[in-house]
Length: 487
Ligand code: URP
Ligand code: ZN
Ligand code: ZN
Image (cartoon, rainbow, N blue to C red; front, side, top):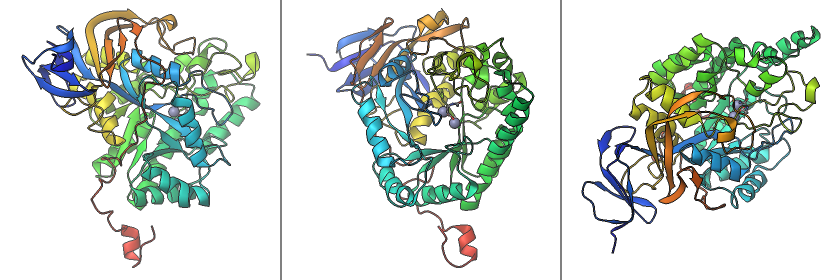
């Protein structure tokens, strides 16, 4: 009789803290024992020469989502989670996105109905708040936070998503009361609109002008404003998909002052530049996302931010749009940069890119890689220690990596529904060769082994990076000066 359902032997295990040689015994979907010379497993896996890492958590991805402009993602919860799994990710946190006029509760139910029959790995949801009505702010959102949707994204840009500063303050005050985490898309929309109008009136509509209209200063200004709004109310926030040195500097300075300001960046800001967006014809549309990739200097600033701890999480911001009128190019050949669907795919390549170019080239150690791609996501969004680490009692969500495996990226190799990849032709070293989710083999030998709908929904606890449960919400300092609480 076997002691374990699954035994992984002889591998090198790495967590966010340590790297060590040990066997991993898995029973009933959780890690039961870490040690040497453990008893037999029903299935034995020899991981000699391989790395045994926590499965990645991709806490920023768009799956089966309709954008505010009405464009639908190419990936549903099947293709999106299959692609994630092939890239070594075992948990995704996409968005349940509210459009104006919608009930937030109904939106969440709709996303559950979409995900439940299709997801092959576990998932949680962030909310997107575009319509903070009295009903949403007074009832739906507080109730949803208690039900396990403890983080939500707000936008300082886009016609049908943008919140003004006053609405942002209302949302931040609510997050403070409820200990939720606010994710901020920070770009100054008036700057972008003004630049866009000037470019278009001169007939400059090619994709390359997307990068010019989304100026670095627009990102820096809005990041600074978001940090100030958060500081005013003494509430933690996460700046998502940060690309510009100007924004990184603001986040770093706030952290140096001791503010709970967190940062997220993504592969496109390490591996792409505005030169990609400037490719001939409409080709550059494949690289259009907001904020846009910038230049080599900005790439270096992003690497520094990953190395020095300014960024806590490295996510894909997978926003998969096909290169046709259903996706990137709503007006076909006549689409100007203003109407190109924003976003790039990356759910499958997020980890291999960072492993190859970060760990492989000595920019990050293995423990930092695990922290940035798994553990910190679990802590930030209330999934730790169930997810994001290799520890006794944690879910057996594990990716076994061959650190020497060499791969040349082509779209045909990938499992999403996008049909192209911004990383075509790039040579990578290191690849996840076996992926487990709660002890189930999901991917092995390049083959999918999981059933549709076998992924489970994960309600999120409150973020341990925000204000830990059980600790008092300090009296609001501004209110204290005026003798009675304001929030
Ligand atoms: O361009 C991007 N990042 N598109 C996805 C939507 C968003 O703002 O994250
Ligand atoms: Zn965004
Ligand atoms: Zn996004």
